Image 1: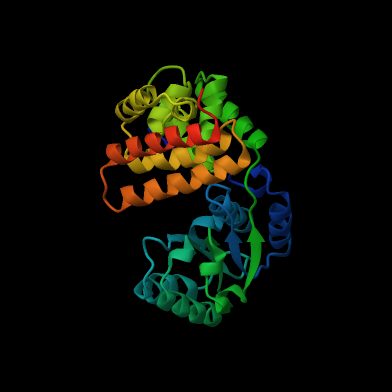
Image 2: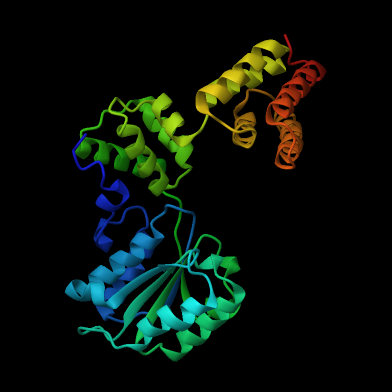
Length: 326
């Protein structure tokens, strides 16, 4: 791995222009039209985390402003600066001044805008109306329904779709090749599992695993991500369903110790893994209900290990009732 390990790979390999963005063809096509015309409306970028919303806003600004990018572009994280004072000061001061260059407006990006307070959103609406001549706003949200309707109606909506596994794998291999990182196929599968389609999270996990100085395999990825190996979880669940309570309990203890997991961590992974078990669909539905009850008890303050052992016991009885136990 290179000596530049201290540089965040998410920044190092972030696209800089619209042409470098992958798997968002319709979005890129519409944004390029804005660049050609040097004109754009206020925008709302919506979609799951790690799908390139903030990157697309930055690439649009780079292509529009060129060498004047730094003077004409501002990005704020509305999750950190979500109050009305920020709208009245920072945002207003940036929006009211004229842009440099031949593009007649600036771009102000509000990341995680769905976390802004209602009062801040109302103040933002008034600011957007007042400074339309000098500034365009791009609001970025995972949950666009949390944006008030008066703002939504003033924005062109862009929906970012989840990245395909093929595109994510290609990006993983591209980074590993340039950084001279060895990664196994199981390591790639583990990254896909822990990332859940969030490319930013996947790249951060990859960098952290690579910093250990050895081949990136599934074990390294799961330990860095604070997740249990799903194969081990499924084996534990299968043992319980087949009546081997003590064997399942030993595996549970090993998972808690080896991966340093909390009860909530384990139970949420278990909820995911029951749908991968080789059992009838109606049994999976019943198990999901059982797991949900145990999760509620843990969240309410019950002892993690006692409740997880309780879950294993319930699985043993469930397996006997359904004829799964052998």
